[in-house]
Image (cartoon, rainbow, N blue to C red; front, side):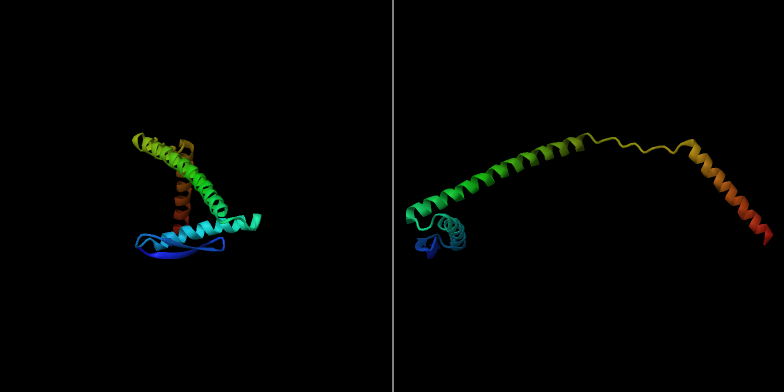
Amino acid sequence: MPELKISVGGREFDVACQEGEEHFLRSAAAMLDTEASVLLGQIGRIPETRMLLMSGLMLADKTAGLEDQLRSALARAKTAEAALSEAQANPTRVEVPVIPVEVTDTLAEIAARAEALADRVEESL
């Protein structure tokens, strides 16, 4: 079982962990050290047990906030998935607008005039 030396709040600790979990222990220790540094910056020197307790509580508070955000995001995702399933089950009817008769007539008249002009140009050549 590997033993690591970690630093939290400027204090060194020897901690054992399972084989292959050293990276996770270092990462957790770095997070705890960050919180301890905040405490030390605000309060100054405090007893080791109090520093570790307060740092752990600060991390737990952040974790609880992230869990709340995750629950909210999962609920929104579930709602969106339900809406998507509903939309796929009942596709929306899309209607393509019909070109009004006046527009069609006008385009036909313009085409006829263009052909007449083309005929005149052709005859004059």
